Length: 357
Ligand code: AMP
Image (cartoon, rainbow, N blue to C red; front, side):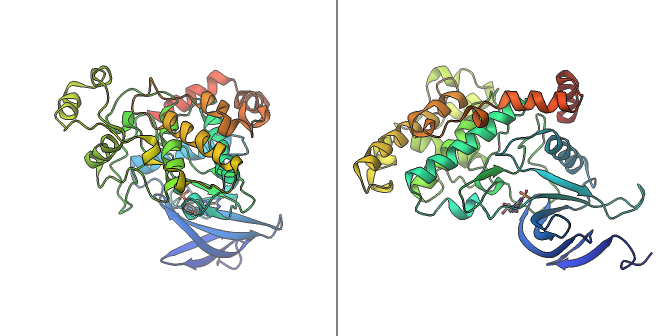
């Protein structure tokens, strides 16, 4: 069958050919990530703009295959306003033997957080964006997914300040440093537990939120390490050498390395995030500034035992102004979704566990 007879049409997007259902028209490249290129398009059936992501040869190796499978299953399970919604999935190939490419159609947002993070954000916008990130990750946590790799490029926003998380982060046993693509992995937002290979819990994601908030305030990446090892140097130079009690929880080889570093006293948060870095037009702004700095000082804590939890961050005065249980209390909707799909919670958890191995 020729292309014109089929349900599909092909469009050249940069170096890549998008072969998509004919209902998707007006394709334009809007971004690229570790898995491939993303285009905006018009869904002529729904009359709505959408994002189309091409996963190029997702089964070329085990890492790609597991990541693609995990992303697809989780996108289908998760249902929350702060997590991107999957609208359609298709492949233009007609048999299993030919199967090469997978296209994910998602709701279209206006920009990634990378484009917004360095703008002059007022306290309302900044706290609302952070509130939505926290609601999104709380929902993921309630479904048993701990992200560990939240970063501005994986978060998208609309001009009305609504926000959605695009992906599900690192799989439990992901060999994330091994990828057969020239794509550079950004590690600036990864928590000490991840950098140092320690046990982690839900508040590993709070670290990343702290880094994102710090960047919103300062206008630059706060821990910009050149590599894995330098990432740790940047953290201790700013926050100071962690306690012996923390060091004792490290694996021996890592502990030896970490303990042989010079001792750093750390910088005061008033110095790190001075008043002038925040909006300060009114008395209200001044109050908000002190709340914002207080929240930063509770999120950017090296030791996860001393760092706030997601629930505590959602209850913090800087964030709590936005609190709506329907958005922040994520457990309910997940349970509803699962029963709605006639799958038991344990069944799904088992499936997720298998995927993450
Ligand atoms: P990803 O491959 O999911 O990491 O996406 C790569 C980039 O494409 C992101 O950083 C965004 O700039 C853009 N992008 C992905 N999905 C969307 C979407 N649904 N709406 C708008 N932009 C998107």
